[in-house]
Length: 150
Image 1 (tube, rainbow, N blue to C red):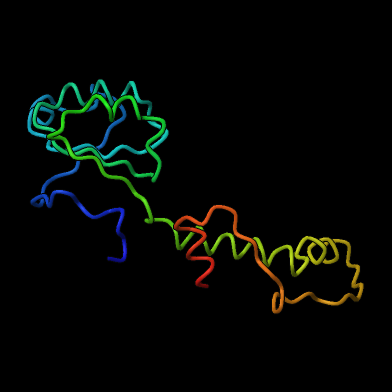
Image 2 (cartoon, rainbow, N blue to C red; image 1 turned 90 degrees about the vertical axis):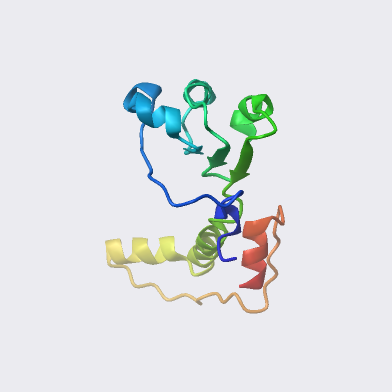
């Protein structure tokens, strides 16, 4: 799948989405029927616990980000009937492209070119190339793997 981290587990029927930052933002009728929560950082673990406590039908919690460290206590407190998923891999391509952009930014001496333009100094220099250089990847997770493939 193109977005493996966003696959719904278990598959859910089409429904409605309601947005808020606290329990008070939601109609109580909606809270009684809600089957899942999409957690978007930096919402606090305490807010998530309070919201989940008001959702008697909640069977799925999805974290928009890949990491669950900041809500680990909450995740451990869930019943085994509640599925937890995260956004692992959802942003790998865009972040890998950003890493490539940064690499080219410094390799091509973009700050130097910008400063030259600003000061109207047109000094001549040899433009570096990436070809033949070695790229070291620290942490070969989903982002590093996409960088390596590109």
